[in-house]
Amino acid sequence: MNISIVIPLYNEEDNVRALHERLKGVLENLQLEYEIIYIDDGSNDETLILLHDIQKDDKNVLVLSLRRNFGQTAAFAAGFDFARGDIIITMDGDLQNDPNDIPRLIKAMEGYDLVSGWRKKRKDPFLSRRLPSVIANWLISKVTGVRLHDYGCSLKAYRRDVVKNLRLYGEMHRFIPAIASWYGVRIAEIETTHHPRHKGKSKYGISRTVKVLLDLITVKFLQSFSTKPIQFFGPLGIVFGIGGIGVSLYLTVLKLVSGIDIGGRPLLLLGVLLIIVGIQFVGMGLLGEMIVRVYHESQKKPIYAIKKILGPSK
Image (cartoon, rainbow, N blue to C red):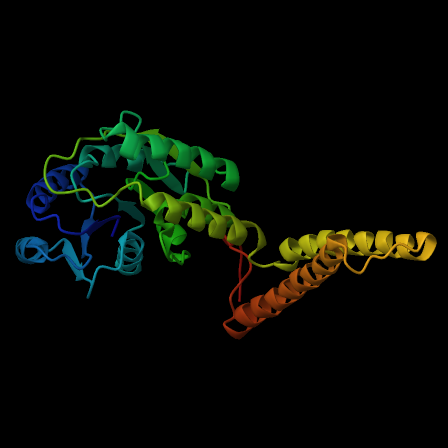
């Protein structure tokens, strides 16, 4: 199997047939062995029925029907688990991504492990979709250090070993390049065509901004401190602890030297609070270290990623 196309669908009955016809035309011209994996993410319209008909007529199609609407990240994860291709390509099912970009993605994979699409001329409303996306892309690039113009574009190509090492939760599908960067993957970005939505209703909105921000915090923490939490919590605990001790020493000197009453001063409460918070942060770091060790050692999870092995191995 050379190529797997993974496409989550949720209430896309107006687009399914046209999407499949366009995909089939592009993939057959490539003259490569391929499969198309449609994931019905708990649709409550005719999407699953149409997918059933498509699968009966095309043996290159695999349909996964989720029991309820788990979200796009879970749908991608299901598709990755069943994908058999050496190159796995993801895209949306609303016909806004263009299947004709697939050959360009495959060609761009030469020398790279992940190629991300960039909807440079995006056909979406500016205030509700494009402006929040520009801000989010800039923020994600700054925080994660992985510079991409368009994290939200679903049209991406991955090598098989990249997605098989991923564990996705929440709304993490948009952060896959940042998550994969931990493994040292080579990432490229190419411009792709973006079409306006003509049929169906968009499932995205401004309300996702908060989720993106929270997931960004999670990704940054996992990217930098997943195997060394004490290095995150420890410095914070030391800073708070030193601050609290400094305040307490200052008040002690005032009491002993000047005889000033410090019992009712708010500064005393601040000093005690800072010391307690500092101890708690260090304690959280130590607990995190214990959890990390239990997690990795009990399940034999590696803390490294091997790209290839040259020569004999056990």
